[in-house]
Every structure is written in structure tokens, then in C-alpha cells.
Image (cartoon, rainbow, N blue to C red; front, side, top):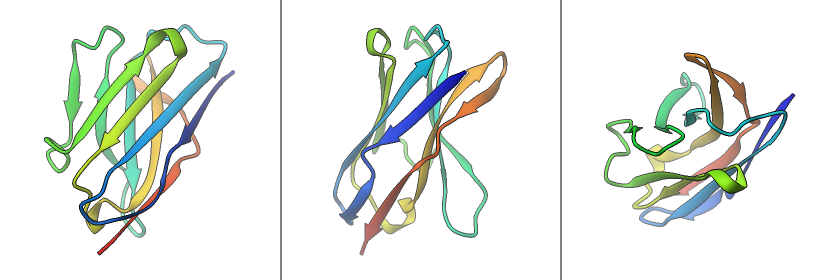
Length: 117
């Protein structure tokens, strides 16, 4: 069993910053690619960023490039998403996910990020 728990969400004004954390626990070997996704009300879930175990392969959605930074601390089973220059369009529930094989298999419950104008 794998558990992913996100934290760090909240309400922030446009232009502000937040740093999300995702803690992984359970029967894992923390070598999987980790990703962040978000889902805004009435919209499909969308990819935000991903990072592989050795941090050599990092990807971002075009909408967040240059503003968001994904990172991880393997020794602590933690993944982060630092978000800067936030806009109301970034308002969503942000979830972290862990790959098993080629697919994101384990998902957290998500943390709400609300950006006010």
C-alpha cells in the first residue's frame, strides 16, 4: 500500500507564491517518477510537472514553465512544487502522483490552491 499526502495549499493573492509538498509512505521504494497534476472546477485534470528519481528528466506544462519548480528529496520520500507568480488561472486542486511502470498509478487526495485577483 502506498500513500501520498499533499500539503501546502491555501489562498494567495495573484502574484504570490506557494510551495506544495507531497509525502510518500508505505511499501515503496522511492525511485519512481513523480508528478504533479491539477484539476480546476469543471475542467479535466491536467499535467503540471514531473521529475524522475535521479532528477535528470524534469518536465513542465507550458502554462507553468518559468513559474513553477518541481523538486524531490529522495532520502525523505518528499516531492515539492514551488509555485511563483500565481494567477487566478492556477486555481485548482493539486495532486501528486507516483508512476508504476509507464503510468501514474498512485494518487494523493489533493490540496486546494486558490489564487485571488
